[in-house]
Amino acid sequence: MPYPVYESGGLQETVALVEKIGRRAIAYEADVRDVVALETAAAAGYEHFERLDTIVANAGIGGGGPLLEFTSAQWQSMVDINLTGLFNTMKATVPLMIRAGRGGSVIVINSTAGLKGIPGCGHYAAAKHGGVGLARTLANEVAPHNIRVNLVCPTGVGSPMTFNEWSRRLFRPDLAHPTNEDIALVMRQHHLLDVPWVDERDVSNAVLFLASDEARYITGAALPVDAGALVR
Image (cartoon, rainbow, N blue to C red):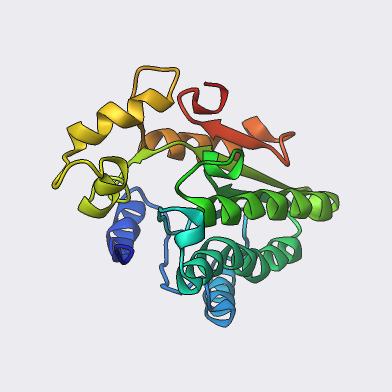
């Protein structure tokens, strides 16, 4: 079964919301597999604002199945987007943050699969484990510039990447057309807290914390937003 594709839309809506509160915003689209496109977008943003304080690396794809049954193409696609794409994002943006000379915060959206082996998503877990090593290495290298690098590691999130036919069938292969309620019964079992998934806002709040001065001495950390999944 091919991976579902989600359109990146909503950028102009985000720009409008930012401008509505009296702030400035510009938006560009770029494929994280294309480092030149990323560098072009980052340079344009830096030229416009003349600063870069926070970088959030959030692009990624999901997928599931037995590890040894993945095709080479499936493996490569996962690594290209979830790991090499992260490297490309860092390469395109962090030098601009260093040039600005103001310090800053780099935040990588990772996963609980980056901190433990999870059956059924081996290529995803491998790429996410690689992301943890990449982020922690960068944290060491840019600390002299007062740049912090951290990761947010959510469990399943109540978002379109979970609420779709393809993803629901991963959790409930016993059902022909599982609903969100059907997968909630399974996903809830992974957590200490009595929730099947966390909300998008929970991840955003962790990002805001790590970007803020409240986290000014936190770097190299992998912050779980996981309802207790990692200690269950």
